[in-house]
Image (cartoon, rainbow, N blue to C red):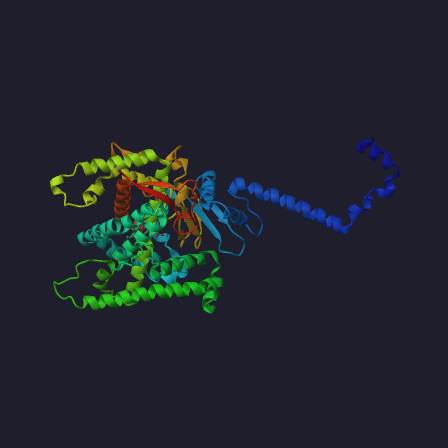
Length: 535
Ligand code: HEM
């Protein structure tokens, strides 16, 4: 047996016959390969070393783009959180040359206060957002800045704090939970079929916000969970509008002009939403013309309130503007509470001790009832003053929103050169993303246990304690703080307490629960649960 070393020795005698002649290394082709490989290795090492300084590798021409493509295959929110933790809360994303994909991403509460409050007027929603959403949202509150935004905000906030509005919400929530949600849950128990809780809750809040905005109930939440064309058109219009943010503007504008691809579908769904809204406005005008003087429509809703107001020139608002107001309000309030509730029930499934504590809090509150005051209800209907007392439940909902904020990322445009409190220099025209999801996972903000679900962090001496809006930004902050916040808490508490008091909710074993990449942090595959009645 001869070993390879021996073979080499034996063959070395006739090397001039088999070996590669050394002159080959001077061939121009080989030299070009050498130079190319050396440059590639140098660039790769240099780009990868930039990760330390900039948070991600920066490649020539394509910038940080490859990392995003890679990250999109996994959980993009966790990916952003990881980078922000490594870069002390702020980093600059560099996209490919000659594109607009260059952003500053931050989760630093000091920067958020600067952005949302201190220098509010320098960071509007901006032209880019407005242009992209204009076809769907028009001049409604979500898509407006300056005076157009201010006037809608003032009127809508006033409306949301009236006694009529409180009556409307109490009445509509009773109806939705007791007459519509419970029968659907009962069907699932009787038929032994797990139910997608996210889907059911989405239907509930969609019906609820339509009642508030339009004074109309689309009936999405009812037995058999029917398809409702208006809700479907609204869903499609939102999804296809958001798609525009991922496509270069010129491209979707050409597609819109040619009425093709996703733009064709968007056009169709927007038309359906607008037709529905126009019909409601026509009918309401007719109805209101029947009332006169002191004789007013009994139930107040946003559309009716705005119909009674006048614009700058003393004229009633145009039908288009009324439509924009309602469509924007529905967009703002249709899914954020239901998605938050879905994550909340999933977290309860993982933390049964918290669920028990919420249940005992509710039982304690119900136990204080004066029975002589009981209106002979079949099932317990929580009264507004009882819902208010459910402080541990409020803490648990806030904790769910801290970890899974319904709007995981939001953004603003920079209209003048600025400097953030952490020293980041911002240039006019740049976009700033604030990563609300990542903020819930920063030790620097919430401490070492930031990833744990601990409602107790919101409680002090047995009372719920709120947090600064720049640390807990789930409802935004500053002048654009969510105007539905108080209502959303009431709605979520009423729905959660009613379910928890009557049922035990169990997530189907090994059910995949992951966030979807969208404006709202939906669960990608919904939340399949089984229910059992509490005895
Ligand atoms: C858990 C539930 C909710 C969460 C987490 C939430 C969160 C937010 C956030 C983050 C914004 C700022 C969005 C932006 O400007 O880009 C916002 C704005 C807004 N929200 Fe909510 N929201 C919730 C429920 C509601 C509900 C139920 C309503 C309506 C009844 C509502 C009405 C609005 C309106 C009208 C705005 C626009 C405010 C403005 O631009 O001045 N929200 N909300």
